[in-house]
Length: 198
Image (tube, rainbow, N blue to C red):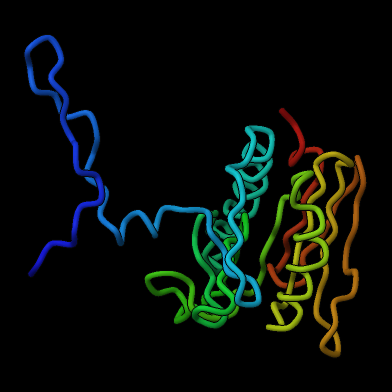
């Protein structure tokens, strides 16, 4: 098997007379697989890495969902970004912050996710507001993702949308306090204070 070309040419430096490895070799394939690039309607979109507050919310919410799924006879699988969801290769390839796949739909879990997850969630950053609440909402609606969670940290709100007659409708909503419920993840209720804490 032939090794791919290494992109980094100078991997070592001489420090105090000793040759030291200062760069890990990154292969072309590996470099592409570790980025935050999405393709939306055929356009390449690159976003910045998220802030710590964003990641704290992602982990809080994913942990709540994962514990519920695991304690209820392993209802399915929960994944975090970065993991590509490929709706159509080269046309629509996105990285939702959190996604859930029912065990009945497990065949779409391959190298990446190749197909329609049962739930996707975006934690909205100030720079991604329009993309997450309009562009990605329309994209998820187009592919009939059964449930879309939109989390707004600045307002401390969670809205859960579900597909009805090819369009999203609001299924559950809470602001600052209260609980949201999932239609797709059986029995899941989330106290939003647990999502936005610390």
